[in-house]
Length: 302
Image (cartoon, rainbow, N blue to C red; front, side):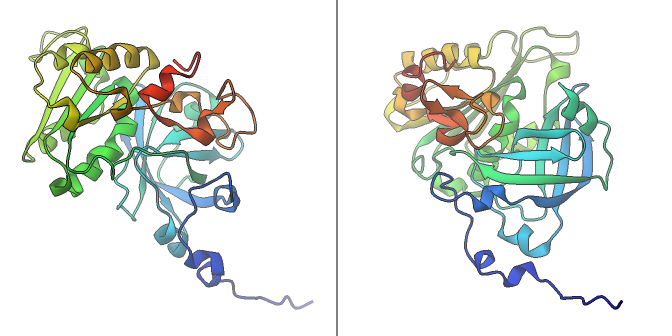
């Protein structure tokens, strides 16, 4: 029996002519769509972290896909499961997405064995984002601890690509030891940009370490800012938020001008599993980005 073949071009669908809808409470078809994607490159960053460059395979879907700094994806590895991953690439990069993944479980362990050409599924983008528009005309402090540099990369790229929109920019990054540093090949590149300063600190130095030693709050001891003209983005382990944001408060930065990401609480991304809720707040639906004033009023958020 002869089979009939109907050519299908996804770019002709009416919804493909519309921008992605980031309001998941009113419409969920965008986040329910699974984008077929391919791993095009794998970069080893540390013993525990790898950077995956992932390309959406359909040309029309790839051009239509957009995200905002601070949002995350659900990445599906067929046969293993699905995990939430923050997006580490520049929002303007249409060629591929960059996902920094730590080996920590079944899905991430299998991903760390994947090679170029492996197929994965992507859903999203999910979540709220860092208010980069609101920060225009102000100084920006970008502060990360450990794996927190992964979600911080998107706002770093945004600031660099829109450098004239912001005043002085400081990037502060801290880890436990030098071998845990992520993206160390980019530090000098960021430092070369006018009015961007980057400082890196470790808690346990090795004999070759030449930089400062201690907790990341030490880097804030000598920063000179006008707190009424400064915004801060803080990414990292939740325990770090308390100390960094307390130090920023000492410097006079209002809590409504500090933004943190609770992406570590993510699970399903759509508020169905209830594993990320804090009281009546679902961090996947109402976050993961919150101003610190809101976090302080969410019991057991950190």
